[in-house]
Image 1 (tube, rainbow, N blue to C red):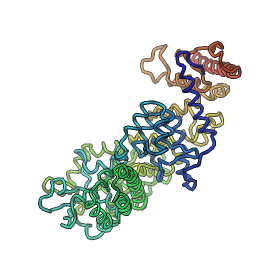
Image 2: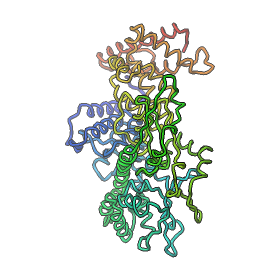
Image 3: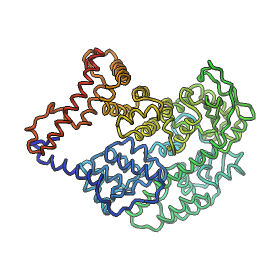
Image 4: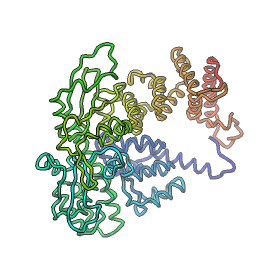
Amino acid sequence: MSSDPARPDLDVSIDLIFSISHQLDRGTPASSTSSSNQDPEVAKAFSEICLACRTGDIEVVDSLLSTPNLDINQVDEYDYSPLILSSLCGHYDIVELLLQRGAVCDRDTFQGARCIYGALTDEIRDLLVSFDISKAVDVTQPFAGHIASLLNPLLGTITADMVFQFKQPGIPEDLRVFKLHRFLLASRSPYFEEKFNGEWENLTVITMPMSVDPAVFKRVINYFYLRTHAVLNDSYAIQDQLLKLARMYELDDLVDGIEEIKGIEDEKARAKIGHDLSFKFVEKARKDLDDFLLQKILGEKLSTEMDLKDDVDLEDIDCTEFLSDAQREALLEADSIPDVILACVDSESESVIYYPVNKSIIARSEYFDTMFKSEMFTVAEEDLPLYREAGVQVINRPQLDTDHLAIIQVSTSTANQKIAEMVLSFLYHDNINNIPLDLSLELLFAADELFLERLKTMSAVNITSQFQKFNFQEFQSLQDKLDCNAYDLIRASWQTRCDKLEQHVTKMIAYNLSEIFNLEIERQKLSDLIKESAERIKERQDTDTIELVDDVRYYLTKKYAINEEIGSFDPTFSSDKNTDDINLYKTALLQYEKDVEIIDYLLDQLHLDA
């Protein structure tokens, strides 16, 4: 609230920040270049990203960047892009994330110049200037990175089930054999889908015709596996061959991309186009796999009824018992080309749901990946029919039978059919179109059990984004909307190690502390929570910190704009300030001290010192 006499520039900087914030909040819109005809969900996501870029909430930004059809380089009604906002407000980590995920900063453009020269810190400015626009956009993303890794898997589970070989004399070793995944090619190309359902159905090895250049074929494979930076930067001769092959395989977006970049000689212009196309290719892959999931997996799931006893433990249910031989055969022959079955016990419908899924995608979950590498699975895989020749090992799919199709189970402690399908959506394309608020907490627990940190964040953001007013009415509405009060939400955050959720709810408690204290039942619940927080510290000493109490005190300083280091208000310290400001500060300080006294009283009643 006050200036530092030793820092004459401080007031200027603070005034500048407040000026920017005022413009952002209340300024007169410039000629907007944002899309007014945008899908409402996309528009909402973009608005929330802009807010998060201003406030520095990197988890919200990271979560929402996966929104389908979101253009990260668009601007809001005030002509601010997310990159500009995060640069102006000094959030280095968000600036870095946005650049990695496709944000463009070209100093030769007006928007780029605003971004660079308006950067709050030299570190951000240097980052913007040095960032190579030609870098691959999405390989650092969990989704794209995982798909790309399937081409060169680490030692472990074999998931490839197709070999494409070239026998032209004199070709390099790395262009002779390609070990690929049928489901991925079929999900991305109508040509390959038709082939795998027709003349290639009973084949494991395809010898490519002499007319196909293996170097060009490799670029198509890079496109399929989202190694997008290795697709477009070629000579005209290669581009012509790639265009021909892309048309044959019915890869319309690749065709459009080649035609767009072909003939562009300016290196910088080519880099920009390639950058944008890489982003588009990844988004097209998301859509393809989303359609694949909906049509081939969710569309071909099987459900079998159970007769649950009142005393049955859902964890003890053996999902293999409810599947007939005919149903197993149907799952094996599903259009999703599965190599594993995911089962989920749904207690509401008293049924078991079976999904024909692909092990290479399911392995995005560390929980399932560890399961696949366990002795139980590695021993079972010794019986898998494999094609082996010249060091090549892939699954010989035409020889698979139902005994080779393992059934794995989503944990029944939190999962139901809806949760399982949201998890599958995340695993297959890194996005969930809609997370119902009343299922957010269940999804959080499921994500924690499956070691899906990014999905945990998405679940937490879905909760926190719905409760941002921090008033007492909102505090009380938690129970109705989530079937869970604030105190249990804190406990859930402890259990799942979700700091994002814990801090948000703690802030809500801090902002409503006096109202909570005035209601006996709420006061008791808060006291119990403080006691639990103290007990979370092993071998706690009498004067050790209590995390919950520390966090509440911190958010109280934010609520009342109190600087804890000052300790008390000294009017002479701000003698140059407006009298009204001084009075406002005095009032805020008194309110702050009253709330701190509440905390001290609760600690005293619990015989705790912190």
